Image (cartoon, rainbow, N blue to C red; front, side):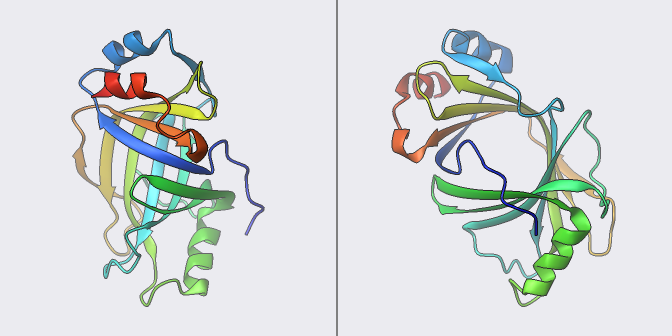
Amino acid sequence: MQPHIPLDLPHRRERRFVIPSVDELLALLAPHVERVFFSANEHVETLYFNNDDHDLPFDVSLRARRYLPAAGVPALDLAAEYFWEVKTGSASIKSKHRTRERLGDIIAHLNAEQFTAAPLRPYVATTYHRRHYVSLAMAGTRLTVDDDIRYYFFPPGAAVAVSIGAQGQPRVEVKERTQTAGQWPRVEALLR
């Protein structure tokens, strides 16, 4: 496995909100946030690993993520580079570790380690358009705004995912360093 990639918020509190309109929310938040770019590509494809027995504990998320110039139907490209992420935690407090790996290496490593009784594989996927914002007043607080959210399933042995639905409304995630969690109530109030 590759070296760990430093994250801006490796241990954090996360809260999610479904919103009716991205434009209206961004107009309300404009005086309080600044847009930041983690990648030139804003379309995200995330592959979530599991097996047909759903052996992974509920508080563990094993996923491969990449940022693309445009959305599309997820397809398994074993040579493609992804951010390999292991996310753990309960309720809203999460920890995340990230490395950069080829998809084929991720799958080989997962199954060599035998995390579960049955082999793990890319099981479901999501794609979405993501924008990042940081608070101008609170260091360690970030918002992500996701829209065009689509869900996919990889049937056993399939290299191309099958669409299983789309989320009709955009989503906002508030991510705060655990030491600052809950100190941005004005934004929370706007999201409710």
